[in-house]
Figure 1 (cartoon, rainbow, N blue to C red):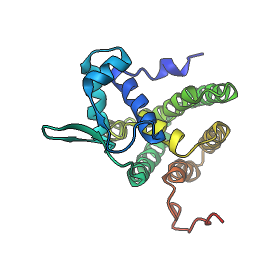
Figure 2 (cartoon, rainbow, N blue to C red; figure 1 turned 90 degrees about the vertical axis):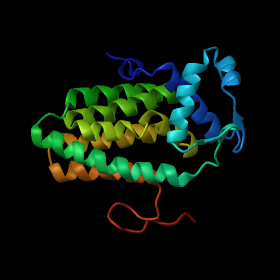
Figure 3 (cartoon, rainbow, N blue to C red; figure 1 turned 90 degrees about the horizontal axis):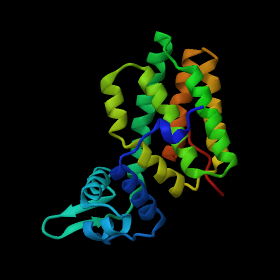
Figure 4 (cartoon, rainbow, N blue to C red; figure 1 turned 45 degrees about the horizontal axis):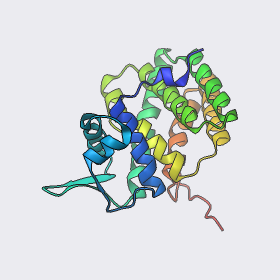
Length: 223
């Protein structure tokens, strides 16, 4: 069986990016703090090149900002950015699901294997492995859609890093992640196109944490 870490191979820069994401969201690196390449390189035991790559991606995610002649600073974490990314992701994954099911290219065996890996990781309380398995699950669906522009748009959302953000910011329970993916898999396995597409869309809208769902219904307010 393929391990999740073998499914998604991150560059050193992407690994640094994800660690900085966790630090920023958790508050370990506060808003307004300057991120110095040389200090980060020393911290991670690497050259400045992968640190520079990580900072570029964080800037694309609007988590840091580069000020001319001053350096790179942590922005105040804006939840709206994360919400917007999940709304866009919902549209992309619903479309990929539709394309794959209509073409008969949905990789059911790979999806089942990934859910099994996710369940095993959750039992070990391994947040990182669960997150990697989640990303692998959705990447299988995106690639099965065989639409290069759609895939590139999905990758541009920096799914790995945003998944890490969600795991920290929303304090997601691992058993819930497994349950949600198992339910999405079951919807796909049912063969009902509209049911599967609705689940694919709602799966992402849930994490958008909006006051309404994808169908315009108001969500119940917490007491």
